Structures are given as C-alpha cells and as structure tokens.
Amino acid sequence: AFREGLPLRRADWPGYLEWAVRCFRIASCGVADATQIHTHMCYSEFNDIIGSIADLDADAITIETARSGLNLYRGIRRQWVMGSARRLEVLPWFAIVEQPAREFILPLTAALLLWLVVLAAVAGLVFNTVHFTRQRIVAPLAVLGQAVARLSSGDWEYRFHIEAHDELGTLAISFQQMAEQLRVSFAALERDRAKMAILNEALAQSESKLTQFLEAVPVGIFVVDARGTPYYANQRAQALLGRGVVFAADASNLGRVYRAYVAGSERLYPTERQPLVRALAGETTTVDDIEIRQGDRVIPLEIWGKPVYNSAGQIVYAIAAMQDITDRKRAEAERNTITEQLQLLNLAYARFVPNEFLQLLSKDSIIDVQPGDAVEREMSVLFADIRNFTAMSEKMTPKDNFRFINAYLSRMEPLIAANHGFIDKYVGDAIVALFSGQADDAVHAAVAMLHRLTHYNTTRQRPDRPPIRIGIGINTGRLMLGTVGGSQRMDSTVISDAVNLAARLERLTKTYGVSLLISHKTFLQLEAARDYGIRLIDRVSVSGKLELVSVFEVFEADSEELRAGKRATKTDFEQAMMLYHLGAIEAAEALLDHCLQICPGDHVAQIYRERCDQRQPSSEH
Image 1 (cartoon, rainbow, N blue to C red):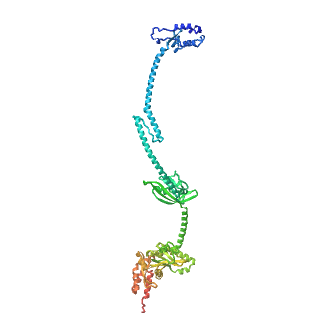
Image 2: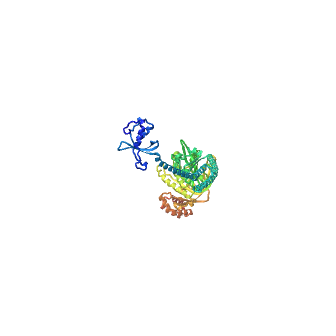
Image 3: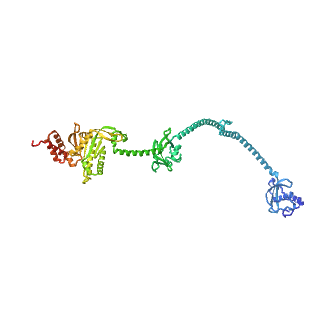
C-alpha cells in the first residue's frame, strides 16, 4: 500500500501494522548494542502513518515524499521511541530503526544533572565571591561615597568608620585625615572670609568716600593704568572731555579718542607731550596749550599730570587733574590787548620821556613818575647844534623846516642809542643827550654822528639843499636828573653846571672852527684815549666860576688829510698853545708857523697865529 500509494481503510490498520512490525522491525542481527543498529525507513511516511492513527482519516493517508532524519514519537506500544527511516536502494522499501527514548535520553539526563551540579557549585562560588567583595570592597566604597557626598554638601562634622586593615582601611584613614584638614582649612578660610568681608566692606566704604571726594572736587580727575588705558574719570572730567572712560583707548591714541588739539591749531596734541603719557614716564608736568573739541565747542584746558607709584616704586597709574580755562584765556586775551595798548602807550610816552630816564629814576612806568622825582648821577652830556640854522630856516617854509629837522634828527638819534645813550630833549635843532655809562660812549656817539653827517651831506649838494655842519660839545660830571612841572604838565630835565659847560663847549666849536670839543673831565674819564685823535686847544673859564676848564679837540671825524696833519703837529701845536698862554709869543709863533706849514687847514692854529699877531708889540713902539 505504501509502495503503490493505495488508500488505507481504518479496518485494515491492525493487519497492516502487524505486518509492518514483522517486516520492518529488525533484530539486533548479531549487534550487541541495539543503539548502534542502523536501519533505513522513510520517517516522514512513518510519521504520517502514526499520525493517521490518531488524527487522520484512513482513506486520506498517502505517502508523497520521503526524507531521512531522527524523530521522537510514540511507538507500537505507545512508548516514546527515537526512530529514523531511510528508503532502501535495492528494494522499494523503507527501513525503520527505533530505540526506546529512555535509553537514548538517560545518558543525556545524567550529563545534564552533572552540569547542573557543576553550575550550582559555580553559582555558589560566585555568590560567595560577590558577597566577599561586597563586604570587603563595595560596602567600604559605599561608605566612602556617602562620606564624600556629605563632605561635598558642606557637612564637615560628618564622621565614618570602616572595619578594614587593608588598602581600603588605609584609604579611609587618609580620607578622614584629609577631611579633618579640609575642615580646619575651611574653618580658617571662613574666619578669613569674615575678615575679608569686613575689609571689603571697609574698602568699599573707602572707595565710596574717595569717589565722593573725587566727584566733589571742582576740577576734572582722569586716571589711566600703567598701559595708558583709561581707568577712572569723574563727572567733571567726563563733561570736559565730552565722553567717559573708553577702555579701548591706550597711551598711543588718547589724543585722537578724546579729540585733544594744540590750542589754536588743527594739529592733534602730540602723544609725547601729553601730561598722562609723560606721567607714565615718571614726569610731573603742567600744560595749558591743549584744547578739547566737542562739535562746535572748543574747551581750552590746563592739565596737571603726575605718576602714581606702588610700594615697590613702580608706576601703576597716572593721574591728571584738569580745569576749564576759558575764562582765564578770555581774561588773558583781554590782558594781552591791554598790555599791547599799554606797550604802545609806553612807546608813545618813551618818545617824550625815554625809558632810560625812567630806569635812572627807578621807575617801571611813566605812570609812576611824579613831579619832583629826581636822582643825582655822574653822566656825560652831549650837546649838538646845527651851525647857522637860523639863516637856513629863513629860506625854508615851516613845513620844510620840520621835514629838514626830522630828517636830520632821525639820522642822529639811532647813533646815540647804539652807544648806550638817550636823548633828554630836543631844543629846536639842538640835541641834548645823556650817557650814564663810560665817557667813551659819548665820544663814540659824537664821532659816529659826524661821520653820518658827512654821508648825509653827499645828498645835499644843491642850492636849495646846502651841506650842513654841526658842533658837538661833551662834558662829564654830576648832575640832577628829574622831572619838573605841575599836576597837569611836567617834563624831564637835567640841572647841572655840567650841562651848561657842554653847551659852552658846543658854542666854542664855532669859535675854533672845529666839530667836536670835550672837557678835561671827559678826557680824564676816557678808557681808550689813544684810540682817538685828541689834542689840547685851550683853557677857558666857566661863567660864574673861577675854575678854568681845559678844552680838547677830537678830530677823529675830520677828513683823512686834515686828521693826518693834526696828528703830525699835535705836539708842536700843544707846545705853542702853552707858550702863548705863558706869554712866549715869538716862540709860539714859530711853532704855529711850522704847524700851518704842515697842516694849512688847521683853523685852531690859524686862530692862535692871529692871536699872537694881536699880542705882538707894534714896531712903531
């Protein structure tokens, strides 16, 4: 039926099964161990048969395929067996081998029990190991972890104990010691923190007071650190600078950041001249030529810069105090205007009252001079006058007269000032000049005036502009210099016989036909008499005085030819002059004739020769 695929009826099952058992069950065939019997059957078809017994309809059982393998199922006797089927190669049969399941499973069960015992032993060992580890390692570590957590939360009074004498015990002891040290340290820190809190509060109060002080001062306060970075600026400084602390600024760009310019210019204030920069270099400075520009507003400032040192002597800050000097600048401008006006006024006054006159009176200004102020000094007086000015002026209009005199005086005045003298007054065309220094100054000025006059005369060679001649007399002596007048009008003047003698000497220049005469008092005061062409020409009496005055001619400004002749005859002339005054007329005449022979243009020698002729007795007598 299996082979043919015929349907099986349930009624035929017992017979077929009995036959199947006889045909298919194989004995041991000499094999001792039945477990080693290998027989072939189609286990899938067999399973189909067995399954059909319980579940399938007999008419529906059909074996379609066959496959080999090992299956567990209930056998003929309804016992669990292990069976395997295989199709035979020679016959169209299947061979089935069965073995009771208990024989097959028993060794496996024994092995499984052995493994279970081993696993139980291993589990016990692992449990004991884990328990040991937990008791000796995990539990102490948990205690340490709890201690760390408590200490981390700030519970420095927490104490713990670990019963261990190994490394964990040592670690626990070390940890407790560390915790104790930390507790002590934190306690000290807490005390220090309390002190620091007090100090910080005091410092904050001090800073607050300092800030109040700095804000209360009427000037701007600006502070930079050692790098030049702005550190502090009070409200006044912020108002003056137009902005507060700019932390991006430094020493190199302070002027640009705060728009600081050189006063009155478009140039930024140089970095190296800024007070704060110089203070960082250790300098204490003050500047008042700086201005801050805020839009259209210009604020001139005066700034004081000073370094701030630490205890080690290092510069840690630089502080600057600043103030607005707009009012002061305005006042200075007004003062400068007034000063300029006063200077112009003084210059105008100086044209009437020389500054040298004020200095001799020990006055700073003409305002300080009062009528009656006077001083006695030894000075040299120079008196200069134009010859025949009256006759010349009669030929000129008043306008031409003033023009001529001003042209003449404008050439003479600088020479007097250049030789440390000053003009006391003009008397018509005459000049009265005073020299408070050496007598040489007056002689130098007189010689220079004569040289300038010679040059001036080269421009006066027309009939309407004839050459002019002047006479100069110089005397040295004590005189009174002061002011005369009343409350409405006063003038400076000199009062002394020395002035009168100078005027007398100037008049004698006309008598002797010379340009420059000096008294013996001036001659004796000369430091370098040998530098001049000088000779003695007379002895005269002063009006109202019994004293005779020796008169010396200074011919240094004469023409070169005349000057050379006078130098050559100087000794003979002076000897002839002395012989004349002693009455030795004939001897004097001989010397004078010799002098005139050498220097025929010597007017003084000619005058003395004429005097000799006048004193010579007549041949009729």
